[in-house]
Amino acid sequence: QVQLVESGGGLVQAGGSLRLSCAASGIIFSVNTMGWYRQTPGKQRELVAQITGAGRTYYADSVKGRFTISRDNAKNTVYLQMNSLKPEDTAVYYCNAFLMSSGDYWGQGTQVTVSS
Image 1 (cartoon, rainbow, N blue to C red):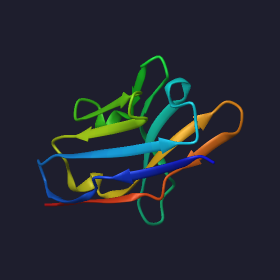
Image 2 (image 1 turned 30 degrees about the vertical axis):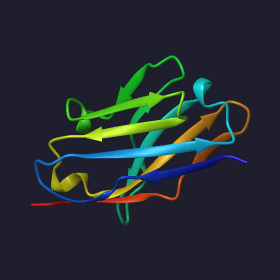
Image 3 (image 1 turned 180 degrees about the horizontal axis):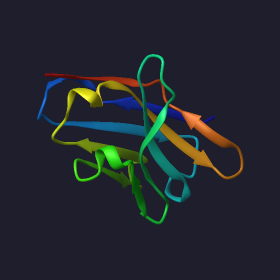
């Protein structure tokens, strides 16, 4: 059974930083592509950052240069370091695991609120 548990969200002032963590279980973590998505009310969930099993990364244009995704395969954990946060980064952030055999899995989400 695949489980993804996020932590690290909260309230921060504009310009501040937060680090999100996502602990995975039930998968062969090291080979899977992991990602962070975010969603605000009335909008579609959007991809923020992604990291492959080989360590290749992808970032949405809106977060390039400010966010960094990383993974610790020994801890089955993926991180999202968010710096220079802006009010428009306010959203619920979801951890995602994409398995070639069975598709997408999601965490429960963690709220990030950036005040101006």
